[in-house]
Amino acid sequence: MEPSTGPLSDRVVAITGAGNGLGRAYAHAAAAAGASVIVADVDLPSAQSVADQIIARGRGAAAVEVDISRPGAGELIVSAARTHFGRLDGLVANAGILSPGPLLDQSPETVHRTIGVNVEGTISTVTAAARAMDDGGSIVVIVSGSMLGADGLALYGTTKAAALGLVYGLALELADTGVRINGLAPRARTGMSEQMGAAGEDKGGPAERVAPAVVYLLADDSRALQGHVLRFDGEHLAVFRPPRIAQEVSAPDWDATAIAAAMAGPLRDEIGSSLPGATRRGGADATDVLHLRTADSSKRLGAEWSG
Image (cartoon, rainbow, N blue to C red; front, side, top):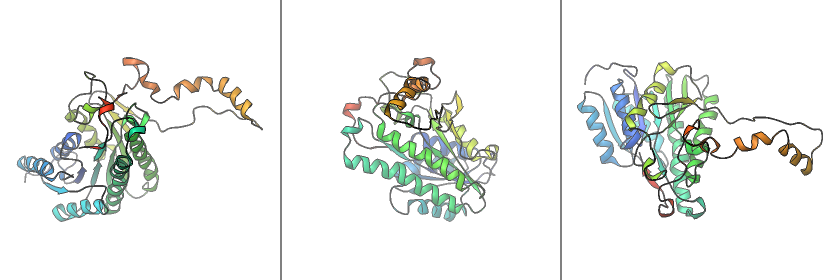
């Protein structure tokens, strides 16, 4: 193994869903930045292929087969990191599944599976990693612009909104522990993104262009960040603002008529800007143009894995 150099020199980083897509790009970028990488994925051959590629380039890597929705998945990843490299310094909670199509048409099994992976699995891996980082560390949770509302992605967006809440809430709990947690909402062309948006729509650039944001969030350069969420597509970088009350109207006594008057009066301008997907309705010049529809959403129902 070559001597480790770079912003993640001598760090041990675990990445879930690292066998394909963005997860694979994150794994290669972390290794290039000096980290030893636990390549975790439900598809062991894919994970092993990524690990072998990293090892061939003189970096440390080990593949682990894990379904993050299963009990003990987080502990399994931590154990792999300790067994192969002695500790865990970073986690990228990237694994997830897309369940495209109208929510009213989703089966109970699909809803249960999607929540099991994207919510319960993310919580499992994140909390296990946080407990294992005795000397501090950095956790990156992958969220999505679909949490703002996207046609045909209500189920997926719900799970990513839960991931956003995990970042904001756990950041407060970890504030004095030396463990940091932040989020990244990436936009790139992957197998998952091909199922979003209309045919021919710009799906972003290669996954490799987004990966530097993960390296930054894992490294000491981002040590001032705790509970922040970045939006990055390889060209445009932004910071999400947490949901907040935009304007408040007070009165000593309310009834439905008074509420209607307030909504038609002082709060009128807030209604349009509070609609789901409001920032995307301004067309290509909007501040954050995201996917509105899933590709062939009427034909794509059921959970689909993606790294």
